[in-house]
Length: 369
Image (tube, rainbow, N blue to C red; front, side, top):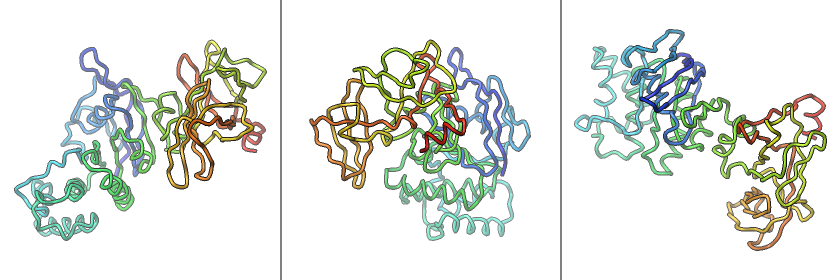
C-alpha cells in the first residue's frame, strides 16, 4: 500500500473553482474519507488522485512519486464507482478474473486469486452465478472484489453505497471497514453521508464549496470543529448556535444571550475580529433543569428508546437537547435549560472560524472538574 499526498491542489473549470488549493496527507493503511455536500469538490479531488482529471495546478504524490500528470492506468490504483459497472454477459467468476486476464496473468494464478478474493468477501457461493440476478449488496461485493484482486497501491471509492437501501448500506459499511482492516489497505472514500464517514473513517476531510475546511479523526471533528460549517454538518442533531447580544467583553467571562440570559464562556486564547461571536453547544451538553437559567417552551420530543431529543424554543433560538429517555418533557410546557459552558465552542462571527480555547493545565483541570 502507499501514502498519498496532495499539495496545493487546484482545479478550475473556466471561472468556476471546483477545488481550491487543497493540501493533505493520506497515510499508508488509513481509511480516509472525503466528506461534504454535493458540489463541494470531493469527487473532483478523488478523480485528480485517480488520474481521471488533471489539476489546474498543484501536485499529487503516490508513495513519494509525483504522479500529477500520469494517466490513471500508470498509477496502480483501483477505482470503485457508485454504479457497479459489471459485465452482464459474464458470471461472477469471470467478472472477478477479468482484470487479471487482461494483464496476462497465468490461468492457475488467476484461479487462486479469484478464490482468495471470493473467500475474503464471503462470496464463494456466487462464483458460478450470472451477475444480473444478484442483489445490490452482492453486486457491490463483486465490484469491490474486481478492485481488490489486482492488489493495487490504493483503493479509491466514489460513493459506492449510494445506490443501496438503508439496511444494505449499514451492513456494507461494516463489511467495507472489516475488509479494509483485513487487507490493510490505503483507502480514499467519498461520501456526503456523515454517518458513513464517522463510522468508517480513520481520518475525515470536510470540504465545502471547493475549500478543504478541516482534516481530523471523527472524534476531533465532533468535539472541536474548525468552522461553523463543520459544526453544523457533523452531528445528528447538529450543534446548536445561540443568538448573542453585543460582543465579547474581556473580563466578565459571560455571554449575554438574546432575551437577557447570561451564560458562562469557556476561556479563550484569542478574541474574535470586531468582538462579534457565535456561541455553539452540542445537544448533549444542555441539561433540562427546572433551575436552569435559560427558559423555553418545548416544541417537540423525538423518542429514541433510551434517549430522546427535545426541541425547545427560547428567546436565543430553537435548541435541540439530547437527554435520557426517563426525562419528562411535554410539548407546550416551559422548561429550564442548563448549558455546560466548558464544552461550548465559540466562533468568530465574521470569519466563521472556531476560536482557540486556552489550554493551560490549570484551566483544563478546572473545565474537566
